[in-house]
Length: 265
Image (cartoon, rainbow, N blue to C red; front, side, top):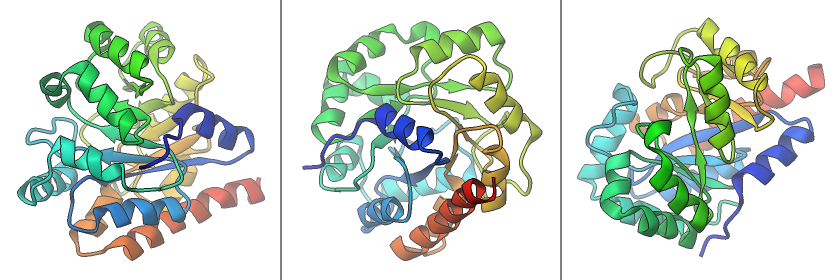
C-alpha cells in the first residue's frame, strides 16, 4: 500500500529550500506500464505527480490528453482501477488525481474522497467544480484528509483570486493561458503575470500549468512561479510509444533546467 504523502508540507519544504517545483502529469491507465511511468518520473525528479483519471468528455483538455483518455478508456481504465493501481505505486512523492466532477458525484463525495486516501492519494483537482458549488465536496475532502487544489485563470479578478487561494489546499494551480491543455511553441505572457498575481495574495506554493511544454519555458515561468505542471508534452511522448525511460528522460531534462536556475542565480 502506498504511503500517504501530504502535498502542501512536501512542496513548502522543497520551495523553502530553494528548489523550483516540478509536477508532471500522467494519464492513468494509459497502457500496461503506466504505473511504471509514475514511478519513473518520480525518480527523475518530480516533486509531486498529477494523475489524470480518464473521462469521456474532458472539457479542460486538448487533443493530446483527450487522445490519451480515449486510449486509456479503451484499455479498460476506470476511476476505481486507476486509484486502486496507485495504491500499489510507491512513488516516494505526493500523488494528486485530476478528475471531472461527474465522476466524483457518481462515486459519492465521501466514498470517493475516502478511496483516494486509502490508496495513498493525498490531493485532488476537480477543474469543472466552481468555487460557488464547492461546499459539499470540500467538506467530504477535508474530513477525509484530501487536499483539494483549485485553479485560477488569467481572467479571474483579484478579489476572486483571494477567495480561491483561501480555499486551496496543497498548492494553487495557476492556468497559464486561456484555452485547453496542449503543447505550445512559446510561453504565453499571461503565465508569468498569473504567477505574480497569485504570489501577491497567497503563501501557498504557486504552480503554473497549461502551455508549459519545454525546459526553457519551465525556466521562464519559474522566474515568477514556485513551479510548473507539465502534462501534454509528457503525454505526447507516451502516446508516441515512449515508455517509462522516455518519460523519465524528459522529466530529467525539466528537472536539470529548473535546478540550473538555483546555481545560476
